[in-house]
Length: 324
Image 1 (cartoon, rainbow, N blue to C red):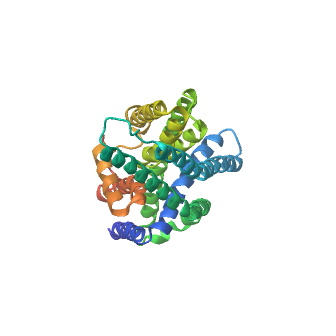
Image 2 (tube, rainbow, N blue to C red):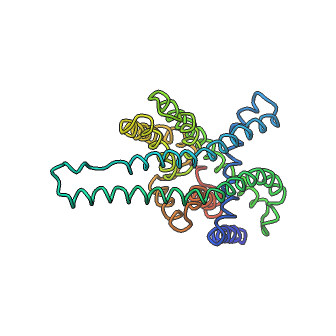
Image 3 (cartoon, one colour):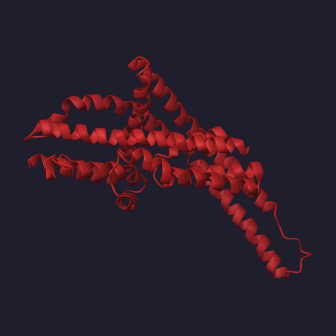
């Protein structure tokens, strides 16, 4: 019973530190998450290749995709955004219309003010780019460090428990496998979503189809916010490629990919990996996101898996499902 309280204590302390220092510990969490993502293709490749070579190929490929999408995301947003808002500043309603002069002046002035305001926002965002690049570098470095740290902790995890170190070790091992199983399924889902977005963007001649496919794959690991993040460059590129028609096509592509993920891919792939009611998932994501912000969304599902495994191992004594 003592070890069960110790586990809860560790979990609560983790959440408190995450709240106090979200940037540093958040980078560790993201690095841990990405390290598992990197291990997924490595395991598939190791069936045909040397395990060490498989890891090198997997890490190099996925980290390159993350770096590629990171360094291209903001330049695309800035360039396409400036083009769009520059066009808006040139739009005006002719004075020879039947509308009253005061209304014409109001509409034209409002249009210019909104466009200038948007351009100022983009210029301010540019000033934050060095900090964002620093964060990407920190996460990348942390990912490599966490990968090595896992082996270090594996040999010493029993020292964190007092009464029954072996049971504590088995709990951590099972929880890690639960999370690894979930991430493995999510990698497959993200690949399918990325392929759909990239191929359809290429078919409809939207600029940056490869970039859109890559960023759709990467952001798919972020519940709810992922589709919002990818929609920004996609709508901009859609507009600059095909005008209003491009915006409509981009929305349809995103809706199609999102619906296929929600109703086909996720239920099919994750049904055996992740037996938690969808309503509990949504509420958990909202609560963790509200309390801990963006990083809370990332740890919501791992926290649920932790609580579920804790309930099975320490409350039910590991007997759940044995008689079913």
